[in-house]
Length: 460
Image (cartoon, rainbow, N blue to C red; front, side):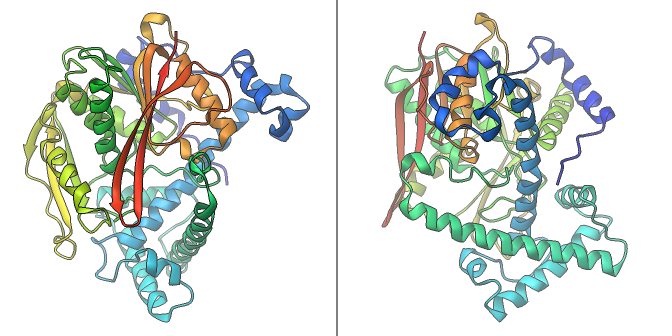
């Protein structure tokens, strides 16, 4: 299935929204052959078939791969739709389909029954003319894929699509669990290499990044006031995430602001003098951030909801450290406001705050449509980034693509600049990025589960 590119008018409109900021940045360019050669040589025995006999065809190959990667967004959006079916609380009173129930789908008459009822309720909500912003987004996605809600037969086709994707997710999770049993840390870093690229997000990685930045400051790897120019790769668009499908607030993109808040609190960034760019392949993310920037330029704040679910199976020790961070999150870049009302059926488990981000902060976050695996910004020395962050991004790629991304990230960093990721980047190919630190966060004690943030520092 091919992804239809946004209409030219939409692309022009997006460009006009961010033109003043983008005028300061060169346009992304595809990775040149000479920059890719170390990676091509290191993977000589396992290159993609098209490159094994024709390395000179690199330029055509890399452009074709960029298109292929962007097509995976369709499957990722289907995953978001499936998570909405599993977890959504605004359109149905049926049981949520947790992982235990998901594994039984297709073999349990009970699970099949409430999955079927959930699908009926979701189709009804998607078809409703006055549906929420998130539902409208999912409806537009389905219409773009050729589905319709006009007749009972067409709505039945949408329902079957929902249930087919539920079965696909069940099978993918089963395969993932099997791979995880024998995977080492390097293999864990690319377990999603064949999956669709999802936009969902939550606060757990942002807390881990805060911990990592604090450790880097204490270790002397970062200095106060040293970070002015920041890039966030794949900041996400939170609506119906894979944990608990929080569908009771509008789609939002918060990670960039969480990072800014941490940097300001730690004294690493002066909020009066920073640049932050998001680097993303998703039109949905880029258009959302551009619209946020436009409304902020008009003097309007950006209000975000900060929910987390206390029934996540993390340890009490983890929550004891997480909650103080969450309570003050956003205080450097905005002010606390009244959050949306949480539906009663999940109110006991959902903790929520809301923050109104100041317009002068929100208007300085600028989206750039680019694929860091195959593209880079050709920056002059003084234009390079001090910090690049990407969480839950590189796990969608194999070692070859991760090596290309690592080279591209290094090319956009200043000497001494830092890359932070909760995915381990393949280190098979020599690059200017060297492993400098690792933050380990125990999220569960029995059995022990540890989350990591990997720090890579650019050498001169």
